[in-house]
Amino acid sequence: MNRSTIDLWVGVFVVMGFVALIFLALRVGNLASFSTGETYQVLAKFSNIGGLKVRAPVKSAGVVVGRIVEIRFDNESYEAVVAMDIEQAYRFPRDTTAKILTSGILGEQYVGLEAGGDDKMLADGERLRLTQSAVVLENLISQFLFNKAAEGKPAEK
Amino acid sequence: MSRLASVRGQIERLGSGLSSQVWRVGFASRFLAYMLLHSGTALRRFHLTIAEIYFAGVLSLVIILVSGLFVGMVLGLQGYETLQRFGASESLGVLVALSLVRELGPVVAGLLFASRAGSAITAEIGLMKATEQLSAMEMMAVDPVARVVAPRFWGGVLSMPLLAALFSAMGVFGGYLVGVQLIGVDAGAFWSQMQAAVDLRNDILNGVYKSIVFGIAVTWIAVFEGYDAVPTAEGVSRATTRTVVTSSLAILALDFVLTALMFTGGNGQ
Image 1 (cartoon, rainbow over the protein chains, first blue to last red):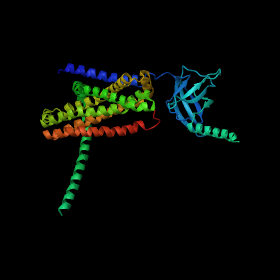
Image 2 (cartoon, rainbow over the protein chains, first blue to last red; image 1 turned 60 degrees about the vertical axis):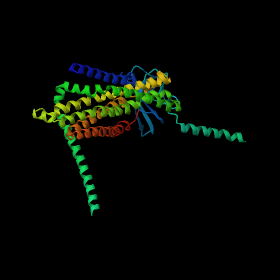
Image 3 (cartoon, one colour; image 1 turned 135 degrees about the vertical axis):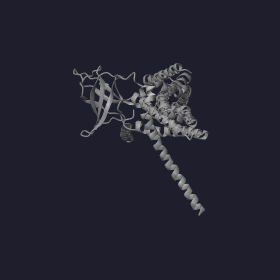
Image 4 (tube, each protein chain N blue to C red; image 1 turned 120 degrees about the horizontal axis):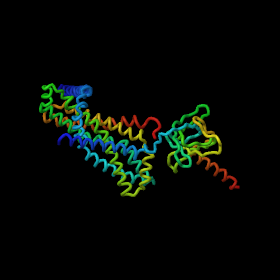
């Protein structure tokens, strides 16, 4: 086989390899939905974040508006501080509520934002005052059992 | 007395075997350093490397693509069987894509590459040595490492990541064929859950890094075994066997180390 034919086949091979990489990045991975736009950071304190992870989505009305960038423990208030980057295009009032929600029963956890009615909008580095922690299954069950026990007592009489 | 001597003989054999292995590792490292320093020719006269990419990459395409397709199809079938027990058959895309991109793509492509291209490189260099072509080059003041070994090394190193990417892409396509076309998992859920779960940096790039490391390991072992082969028919055949065995073990061991480094630290995904 002469040299130019070899060059042709090597070219085909290299192009195929890069097409496969691009396919993996765009179709299999999440590069396409990866926004490189400007973001601003908002903090929120939760008494319990459940299974929330860094890079989990921040959603409002079901639409992804940002991502969690950092989770740390505040040693003074004994609460979790969650930092999230929200895309510059989406503005929220200052009295927005942040809730930790779960998609489906066993799905991943995300932060849901519910807009309030304040005139002023959130700025970079501000903290959300109204938060609602993750629902911990054990607490829920113990609460349920406690209520059942309280219900049962007067019925016996 | 004779038993004592036989025990002593065995200990001596063990010791000499061990020290010769350590000697070989040292020689292999020196060989790698020498080859990297003298790979200027391979990169300047790039058509030498192109010919080796043709040999190691293009000619491995068929086996890589066909095995990738079948591995993906098997993953689709097996994954569906298991996932539907938990009512999570929509996650089939995630399972197929993550297992291919993170593990099976680089590892299986590496193993196939070692047996298809690595063994051929060893046999070729070993035969060149046995027929004294390498010595003839030295007589003509041509450095055989720069002229013969380095282009083969770079050809293998450049081909391997592309082959692994093709294997993974083909596997995802195979999983799609079985999962969506044959079994009837919803196509939208298959792709969207996959895209939501597979991360570009954590999963895809780490898979690419793995395949680069495997490519370096396999071709290094292959060219070294060929260059170090005993220049007889038997020696070359032994060297070829050693290439396949050593590089397969190296791939699996390196895979464990790399996985431990890449996927355990920090926050997962």
